[in-house]
Each structure stands twice: as structure tokens, then as C-alpha cells.
Length: 319
Image (cartoon, rainbow, N blue to C red):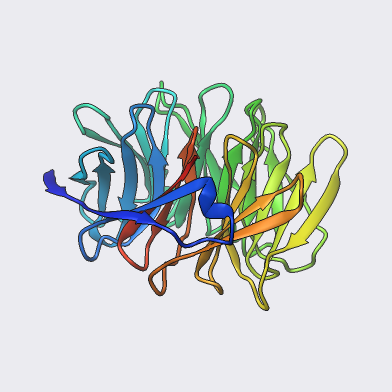
């Protein structure tokens, strides 16, 4: 474990006209080569991020800029990180082919390897259901469940093979994942483990990540189409909006505590906020080229985006 200090960049002012009146943007420079992939904010305000090329999990204290880097093991390639109900940082590690838990106080690392017969699964992201079970995806055509208390793990074949990528839980604890290669989303029956395919209305849209709003609607970022789509699970009805620009590429999606929809748009090198009530977009372009935001998370009053292409973490604070 090593401790360093992040360079804290002042408040940035890049946004659609009028949006800066309510949102303050701040950047935290990380060490060169960090390439932060995913980020998660803990209840105590600490910001955890995966440093994929370094095989480390980083912890930023936004108040002081202090960074602690925790090695996860030889061959580690951490992808996703979320904060569990136990306060631990839970990592999907594609290099280790394992789920990893990092203790928030001691920084002790505990591995939950996938069963060897499964081989390499290309682990991506994870989410906790309403019963405290951890569900995860692997792009090589699997999804799985881990019981953190017992360590028992089950791995399932995805109904259409390769592609499971983003995964998220609804407020009631239901689990949905997106299949990038399969261009669909799926709902997991958390009791049986079975996954049911749900087709978005746009063919070959490249569903990449999913998130739920406070009402349980499922929002989907579509990489190939450049759309953001919404599913109402109660009725099965879909609605779709095209992001601004000529050829948008929607990578990540996240719904904040006010039910605004945030997306990372790679063609415009920008973060995009969508208000479903007015159906209007605000665009927040990065002040550096090649930001490459692959995931978004936050907490009340904050949205965090890791710029994997610039070695920075960006926070959007609601005024």
C-alpha cells in the first residue's frame, strides 16, 4: 500500500449555457498511468476507483487530496468497483478472474475466485440485490452470484452467450444487466438465478450499461445507436431518445438522486445530463482530449466520473 497526494484542480466551468449555475465541476489529477476505469463513493465520502493497468484499487479523500493505492495481487486487472452493504469495496477483477473485497479500514484484500472449470470469464461489473447477494457479469458469456457471508458462488451461462456487461439493482433489489455483444438487457430472477432476455426497440443497439431510477424504471446506454432508452418493467413499455450530436456513442449511464440521467458520450468527449421531465439534454464537455469515461456513480448531491484517458476523477456537485 502506498500513499500519495492528488493534484486538485479548481472548479471547472464547461457546460451547456445555464447548467453551470447549478452545478460545480471539480477535477482530481491521479498519478500518470492510473487509467481509472470505475469509481464508487462510500458513505464516509471516500472515493474508490479501479486502476486497471496497475492492478490496484485506489482510495481518494476529496477533502485532502490524499490517495492510497492498494495492490490487489499478481495479474490483477480490476474493472468494476462498488460499495457493499458492509461498507467494503467490492471489485470485479478480470485478471484474477475473481471477486475481490477490500476492507475499508484495514485495506485487507480477500479474493473469491471463480470456479476453475469456468476458465477466463472477463469479469466486468457487480451489483447487490435486496438480500445482500452480489451479482456480477462476465463478457465471455456468464453472470453469477456470490453469497458474501458463506463465500458460496454460482456461475450461470448467459442466455445468448457473449456480452454481459453493465449490471444494476432497482430500489426494490431486482437485478438487470446489459449485453453489449447481444444488444439486449436481461432481468435476473434472484431466487432461481434464471435470466430473461428483454429486447430494446432499436435493433443492434449495443446496450452497454444499465441503471434504475427511483421508480424502478431501467435506463440503458446504447453504444451503437447513441440512444438512451427507458424500460417500464411494470408495463413493458419502452421510450428512446437520441443523444445530441451527429454520431453520439453512449457508454455509461447513471441516475442521480434527483432522477436526472447522466451519460458519457465518447464522440463529443463529454458528459451528458438528461432531464426526463423536460426531455432536455445538458452537455458538459471535458476540458481535455480523450476523457474516455467508462462508468459513472455518485451519492446525494454528487456525480463522479473517472476519465480513464486523462488520469483524472471528475465530480459534478449540485448547487
